[in-house]
Length: 217
Image 1: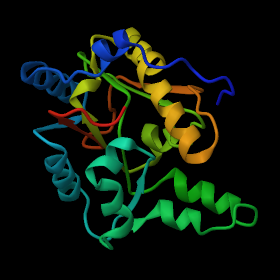
Image 2: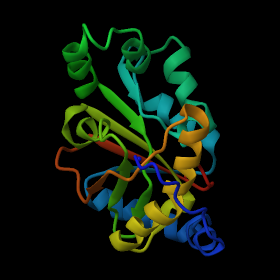
Image 3: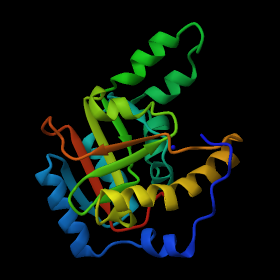
């Protein structure tokens, strides 16, 4: 999700509106909306089940890029991709490459992986997905570059509509992500790019796993 000025802390009102896990019925309704929009949807009860579902969707030996995500880190999917030995983890390969000498090769490698795995910052009742990014680097593969895209989405990320999703990004997700980035990297984050995906054109390309737990921001 850069801005030197530190964003305000998350308010109690934002927590009340954006941090609560939606009801079983609402999550089921959102799953149906995603399916109507061409996005395959799974509903699971826990982060552990989401982790198992991700593993079932990615064949051994596949080239996988895992976006930076508190959700993936918290349920062990990031470790599965990078350290299990089951996949070809692109993030680790890119870290080992020379940014000056291999810049073009790095861009090409990151642009079109077999699988991208990540999360979103909001999903609407109508089945639209919203993702904020500071650099925008992960958005191109999500839109069209990657052959397959898998999202793990905590049940607290459901919002009424796109306008509310944008508010969730600025009022809730961004302050938390900025704090994380400053602590982890010593740099600020920023809502410099927002991707809104209303429908998947290519069949069976995007999968969303909705979880009956609060995961990530």
